[in-house]
Image (cartoon, rainbow, N blue to C red; front, side):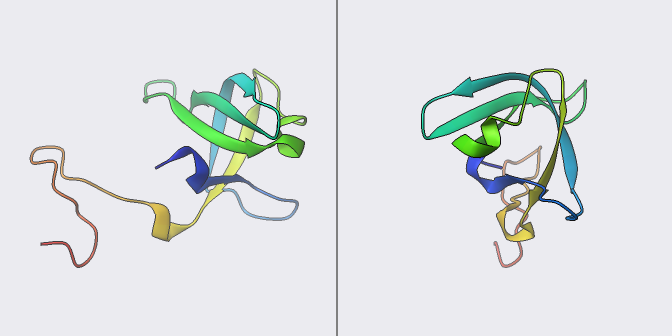
Length: 87
């Protein structure tokens, strides 16, 4: 998953997961929220529009959506893609 593949869940939308935000890196017209989906998992970075970033604080759980087409799975043993249609 790339940072721009996530989107904050909007009012009434069902979140696929939540990011436990550690820091928000404001960069002007965009920001990056850094955190974890699970305490034992790898660091995840989510790209936010500047307006969304104003509503996100460290220590919060940010509800996220992701389009299934943006999820790419790989075999941990071989590193080969598990996406449909891959050889």
